[in-house]
Image 1 (cartoon, rainbow, N blue to C red):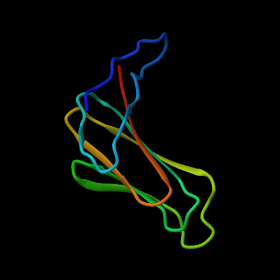
Image 2 (cartoon, helix red, strand yellow):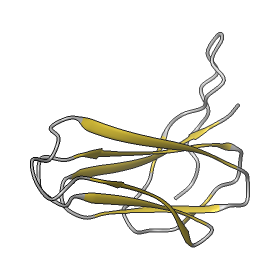
Image 3 (spheres, rainbow, N blue to C red):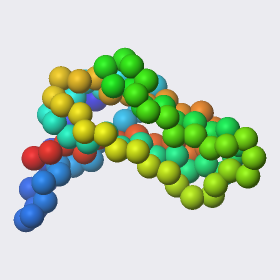
Image 4 (cartoon, rainbow, N blue to C red):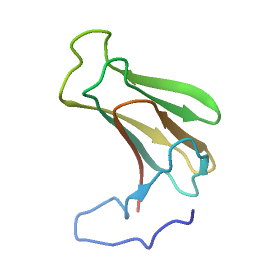
Length: 100
């Protein structure tokens, strides 16, 4: 997956958002932020974020009465790092926001 064209807007320090594919490695060619979300309405939903092949964070619901809200996690990543996310049940999404 290649980087999308960067939009320069007055006062904006972020480029165009890149959508990550579930369970697929993405090598980052610029500094930026990895953001994951889990919209869980099911029991035991999980979303794991990996940096350089190591599981670094986990968003998860409980065993009973899962939340109906969305949970987020954001991490700063440097150019050259490999990022990935993997989600189970629930709606999981992963994005990379490059800095411009």
